[in-house]
Length: 249
Length: 256
Image (tube, rainbow over all chains, first blue to last red; front, side):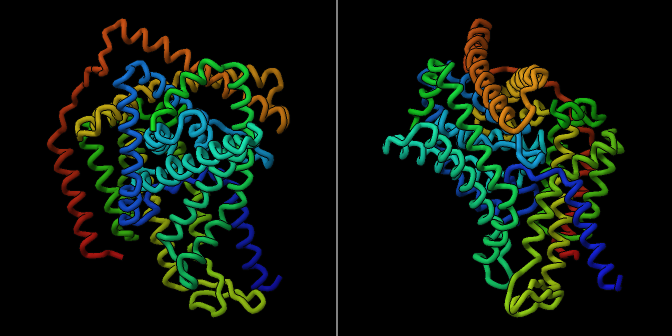
């Protein structure tokens, strides 16, 4: 081998080794300390109105009926546990659900925003997915933008009388994809490319994360459909109880 | 179960005052992110390593494994920062592909190094907090800094329920596995979906029973827990203040 070939060979081996040991990417949590402070604060501020709206509506529900608190807390714990379990995947890598689509369909976007930020805090502290400084950015992409899209699509499909299964799949799948796009854009805004600026950078981040995130979104969509079907078969009264949360808007 | 939560109960620093630990972790985290300095990140990484592994007696092997969790994210996204596709080559390296170049500048390589090291230092701050402080202590601190009461209440309940549900989920999954429920992709998807649905139903049932139990014990919208207090030692406060002042000076001097 020539010297140059050797270097290339070594680089390739190093790359392969790194990726072989790397625990495969979770959902798109931006890691602790990755965003500059100004962006952390800005995304936090963007989240505030949504969180306040969710908070107020939840508080109102609680004042009407205090019993709701355990219901809300159980739902939050459910989203956390579902997102912490390994899900089946085709490639054999280990990945997790985000639970945003399921949460939005079951609980409605208002409740999910508040539960989402709590779940994200627990994910950061207990599982080291995401972080405290990036909490604002992660909350926006996973607890606000994703669920809003999921919920919107679910309602829209309901209006257009699309098959229920298809509408659930689309809601979860597109909600997940949207989360991933928002995260890529958040990263791109913080780190614009040297040649081509924010847009070029966004394309790069989208491209880099696509191989893990697109299959994940499909699987998340399928799983959400399976879960919703099972719930509708066995748990109509329970669903009604949760539907109570959804009216809160 | 959840590794970090289990470890923090056996940490030797568990009974150190939670507010001191919280303040230290958050301030250090902020200085790391603000400065993005290689020197400061190296210092913070070392100090946190000594505190968590040396003082807190968290096994080094586990600590190393935990530190590597964000590795995939950092490799992928830093890759996206340093690789550009452009028609004109930049100064650090340029690999021609047809009439385009895969290229990057020296400045961006330097920046990527700072980014990686300071992000790892930030992660070590997060771990210092979560591996040495129990969640109930963290919630106590949150209540003291006037986080809305409803939030703290919800977090306390959710924290408790997480373990109840994790246990239920793992029991269901064990019995599914013993019946070949995760044999191939198709059965896995079905099993997982059924497990999640049953989990949800059980969670709701339990939430009703739980509310009854709480109410019969006089629940009035607030759970009052006796907070054990571990007053901070003067030595700890002085050390933390000195360290943070040193980091602040480092920030102002703009260390490399």
